[in-house]
Amino acid sequence: MNTSGNNYTSCPSKLTLKIPWKNLYTEPVIATIDGLYALAVPNVGIKYNEEKEKKEAQENKQKKLQALEEVKKLEAEKGSVVSFKDFHISFKNFQVSIKTCSLC
Image (tube, rainbow, N blue to C red; front, side):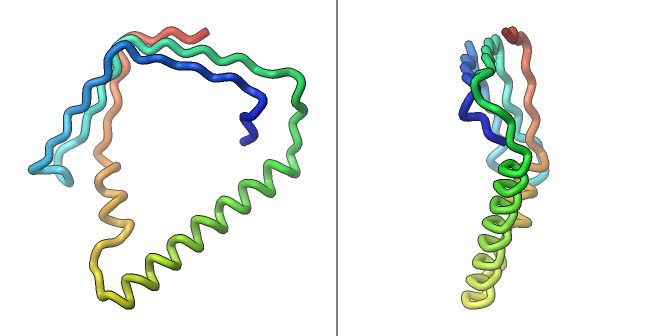
């Protein structure tokens, strides 16, 4: 998405992370945000270009596929068991809690 024409500002008052280091894959990582203030101001001077958005989305997908292919190639060369599956699991148990939020 082309967000270069939009202005975003946010400021959390307090951010707390609870990370269960001994049980990272079985217990959730909990992020608690207390007092989030966000301001989003659209820029009406920029026009939406659907074709450009589709092209950028396709390019991003291709980059991700290339990165995955490179990882698979490296794993095959090194015989490593570490993969994106492990990375995904660590974020599967990620919880975010926002106590107070003001959007303008």
